Length: 91
Image 1 (cartoon, helix red, strand yellow):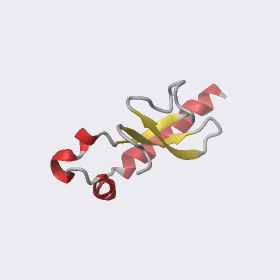
Image 2: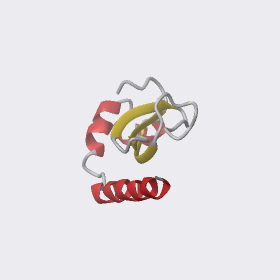
Image 3: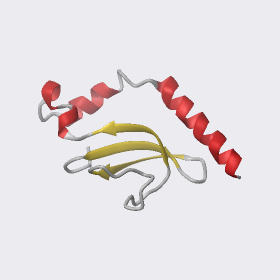
């Protein structure tokens, strides 16, 4: 909810393998130099108005509340595990 305007919310893995949540403006993401916090995204939530306007109009909070009902946590977990394997290979 703190993202003013268009952007994304990210759950990502930091270089130390811990999880973090942040948001980025517009098309930026945690893998880009423009991001203030960097890491490998394992879940992204679109908070651009086009993602929710037809169903929720300008009610971003309602959209973000409803998103929890459709998240595929098995897929997010698989992304996390895959990321850890990649980090282990680099170490």
